Amino acid sequence: MSSLRPLSLLETRVLGVLAEKQRTVPDSYPLTLNSIVAGCNQKTSRQPILEATDAEVQAAVDSLKALSLVTETSGGRAFRYAHNIDGVLRIPSQSIALLTVLMLRGPQTPGELRIACDRMHNFADISSVEAFLDELAARPAGSLVVKLPRLPGARESRWTHLLSGTPAEEAPSPPGHAALTAGAEVSLGEVAALKAHVAQLEAELARMKTLVARICSELGMSEAS
Image (tube, rainbow, N blue to C red; front, side):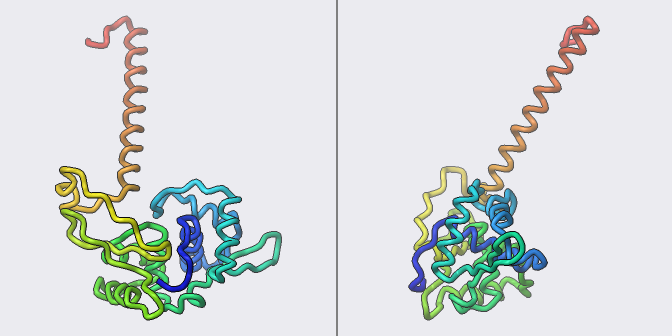
């Protein structure tokens, strides 16, 4: 990428939150520290899920300010912060939207990017997304994205940002994973959500069993009957 030092996960999350909220909630932008923290720890549209503290987010904001990627304004009762991605990286708004999604959600296919970018920029088709990705990858000042090797069973290759340096090589898929991804690519967030849903159903089932047992006991009936 460019001469910019590699950013940490939290730094890219902060930068992504600022870029996202500029487009999706312009009336609240620039953001206060509390709003940035909430955006960083958001449970939806984020991968991975974080639980960053106010102090950690403030430190990330300060380090991004030192890189000129974030600007600070005062007024009212709290400082407010805005991103300066366009000023530092010199890329168009369409490319900023793509980078924003990659910073917030991790590697994505062009099709996933088009859907996820909808509130920030409405790409006409997938080929338009791919054109901007190719442009970011071939950027003279340094590549900002890279296409990852296609995973076994996956129909499309995913892209990732390079703001945090060269991505680590992904581990080979376990046996049987190809059959799962052949129909659709499942993110870690989706798996976590599914596990949480299963746990909720199991807890509900346990409560129902307890209730049935109590009713049977009060009526002098056995559960089997």
